[in-house]
Amino acid sequence: SAAYFAINRSANNAMQSYINKTAAAHTTASTGLTNGSISLLSKADLSNFCANEISVFATGGSLTASEHGLLVDAIETYMDSNGKGILA
Image (cartoon, rainbow, N blue to C red; front, side, top):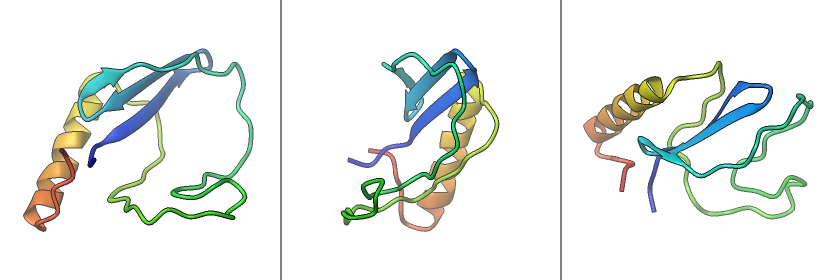
């Protein structure tokens, strides 16, 4: 199903996740950063791919719950204007 999914790491020991504008269950954040690659719609070793689509992918600084809501609204408004709404 189509949805906005976000993981937010607000501190080295704090993490929040959202599906659309709703806080979702999550696990405890790590206590340190590691370097690595991000694989989208594939296994980390790139040996398997998925035929699904991603409308938007972004990385950046920590957002508040309210800011995530505003981002969801902005993305959905843009996608709707192009006939490609993303929220289920």
